[in-house]
Length: 411
Image (cartoon, one colour):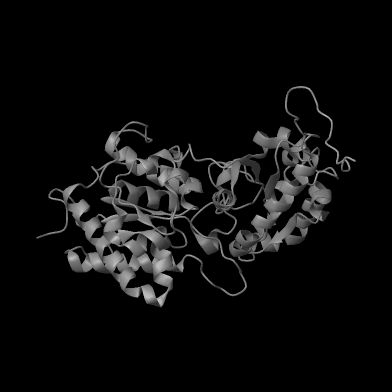
C-alpha cells in the first residue's frame, strides 16, 4: 500500500517539524544546542521510512536542512504548503517564538482558506503536537489549548519529562524509543487518513502569528539600521540585503537562513520580552526621546553610516547619558567587501555613533552569528536595567499615605 495521498505526490513531506531554536550557552566550545531536536527528527524519519514507502528524504522536514544560499523564506513556505502533518514541538520557548507562531498560522490557513487562525474554529487533526519540555496548559496560547491530543498514549514518563527529558537519561531509553515510535505511527495515520488539504503559501512570514494572545509583559525596541536592496551605498553589493531594512542578514554566508532581526526576536521573546522590530525611520522618535519609553537595541550595518540621511537621523540618538539605547555592530569576517573597506567604515561609525560605541553596554564588534546569539541576552539585560533607572514611575491613584514606622512596646 502506498504511503502517499490517493491524489498526492509521494515526495510531499509527511510532516513539518516546527521547533523553537535554542541559543548556545557558550559559543567557545562549538556545542550545538539544537542537535537534540535534530536527533529526534531523524529518528522519526527513520521510523516513517520503515512504516511507509515514502522515498528517501521525503519523510519529514525541519529548517536544519537549509543550506547556504537557500532562500529560507521561499523554502519554508514551500514545505508548509505541501506537508501533510504539522508537528509543533512544545516548550516554553516555542510559544514565545514569533517564527513558530507564523509557521502554525500559515499551515492552519491551508485548511481554512484564510491567512490566520481564528477563535472558535476547530483545529484540524493534521496538527499533531509533541512535548519537548513540559508546558502548563494555562501557559499556552488559545491555539494550542484548542488542540485535542492525548499525549498519554506516548507514555507517562514522556508526559512528565517531554522528549528532551527522556532522551537525555539512559534509564529512560525504553520510554524514549516507545514514545518516538508511537509519535511516528500517529503521524503516518493522520497523513493517510486526515492530511491537510493542499494550499499555496507564497510567504509565511506575512501571516500574523497564531500566538498573538501569548505576549510577554516587558517591551523592548529592536531597531535595524541598514539600507534595503533598492537604496544601497554606492558600490555595495546587495547579497546581504532584502526588500526592507529588517531583512538585513550580515552573516548570510554562515547561516544562509534568516535575517538578524529574526534571531533577535526569538532571543528576546525567549527571555520574556515583547520585541517591537522596525527600521530607523520608524523608531527615530522613540530612540531620541529624553524620557525612555522602553529599553532598545540598535543592530547597525556599518555601511549605513556612510549615507548622509542616516548620519543626520542618528545625530539626536548619539547623545551621552542615554544608556537604555544600546548598539551592536556585526563584522562578518567572511564579507570580503566589508573587510576591504574596514578602515573607512569604522571611521564613519566613530563619527556617527562615537558616544554610543564607547558605552560599556554596546558591542562594536560582533564577529559571528553565534557570538550575536551569545551576547544579545546580556545587552538586553543591561539596556533594561538602565531603562528601569530612568523610566517614569506611576504611583497608584488616590490619596497618599504616610510611610509606616516601627514603635517601641507599650509600657
